[in-house]
Amino acid sequence: MESAGQYDYIIVGAGTAGCLLANRLTRKKGTTVLLIEAGGKDDYLWIHIPVGYLHCIGNPRTDWLYQTEANAGLHGRALIYPRGKVMGGSSSINGMIYMRGQSGDYDRWAEATGDASWAWDQVLPLFMKTENHHGGAGPAHGSGGEWRVEKQRLSWQILDAFRDAADQVGIRKVDDFNGGDNAGCAYFEVNQKRGIRWNTAKAFLKPIAARENLTIMTGCHVERLIIEQTAQGPVCRGVEFTGGGRAFRADAKLETLLAAGAIGSPQILQLSGVGPAGALHQHGIVPLVDAPGVGENLQDHLQLRMVYKVSNAKTLNTSAASWFGKMKIGLEYAMLQSGPMSMAPSQLGAFAKSDPGQASANLQYHVQPLSLEKFGDPLHPFPAFTASVCNLRPTSRGHVRLASKDSYTAPKITPNYLSTAEDRKIAAAALTLTRQIVAAPALAKYAPQEYKPGIHYRTEDELAEAAGHIGTTIFHPVGTCKMGRSSDPTAVVDSQLRVIGVAGLRVVDASVMPNIISGNTNSPTLMIAEKAAQLILAVAH
Image 1: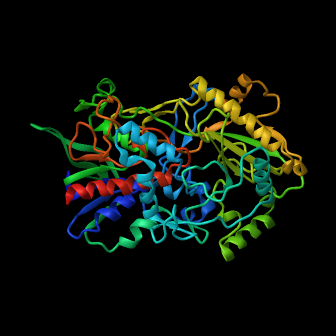
Image 2 (image 1 turned 45 degrees about the vertical axis):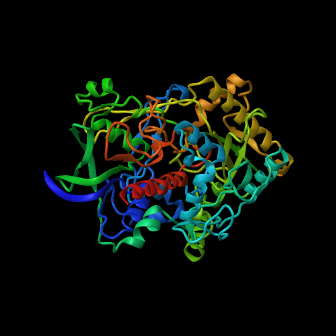
Image 3 (image 1 turned 60 degrees about the vertical axis):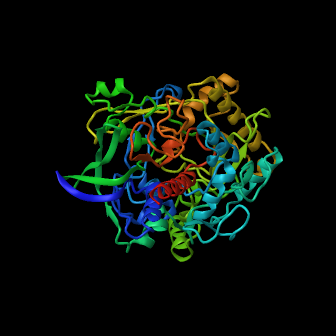
């Protein structure tokens, strides 16, 4: 095994969190950082064209190609489970939606950890620090940061009509989802720069490419952490990884930072002997730290995709149906970086309550002027729109567990969607609310007809069954290395993101969220990394 050298910090994963960590930790001259990424450089054209996510998801060049186990709540279906395997991680293949969640999400984190620094009023400045908002600096937004936030460069009458219809049933029109209360309906803001995807590799790594204290190794697969048993307890000394047919060891003088995501981080911990002891023994792995929470507490947003056929409306289904239409779309993007090729996967959003008893909005809509049977399939041959709705705070919990001690074998991902009565009840209520919106006067001129799931689903039980047929992930896995109090036996990291029971090791990614955010998860992960960098540097100094 070759030595890859010794560094102050080793960061595993050049995704959303890893890119920011590398930027912040190398600001101090003389502080050496190794950033290890399993994927390649973000030089694939389709990463940068917003609609290119269609070519990145399911592509081994940019995606880990995970799949879930068969899910009982989805009538035995297994789902594709995209995760970015490229510089920028999932920020290179995701929906580009800029979303923070609700103030209550972070207040609940503060309660779960016993650490008030995770409360909304404490993390808001961290969001603002990284932000470069199109509207400039203000009470809730930042200017001059690396993370570009822009308005979308498109307009669809059918989406405007849906927004009007939502307003008619009590979901008011708003301008900003990111002030702490996201209730209402608006077009999503996106992480783009003049119609081009803005990923974390561009934002945080490209500007520091010349820093001599940063070493980046791509195409390198981390097999395990090097954990040494000492008189004071287990200590992480670095990592072992492979790349280019060679095996390497890199040593960390200060800390190793796992930023491999909600799937990768728990897998690497388990491969390294940190996880549920019984499960590790089953794979012939000697448990160094019996940590029952590693890989547990998996949470995700399940979107219920309702499709409506329409008349007298322009949708992408019809615009892209001919070669002439496709050429027109391509020319609009080539000349103006606008139109359908600049589209995020979802354009219009809404946040609402499934019932009046909810303390805050617990449903999120992603509305699109298009429809298809499932991701990757061609667009339907008829004009239609899709109104996807998800339960923002599901009570179902899944897990990520080893399938093998071979690090190249994907872990078993079991989300357990719709496994609680509460989630099934909310799913039925969400479908009912969507029908109420679509029946509002603002959409009447388009004569919407329900194509999926179908009007024959009526009762609460029938609608819950329908949710299992049309439900699919919206790609927000979190929680598998959750942070918590020392009294919580299922906590994996403490409130400073230090792995409980192993010195010199932190987890910095979406896996540390104790509860899922009430919205899209990418920018909250960036905030976590910003906070982690401050915590790490405070110790170093």
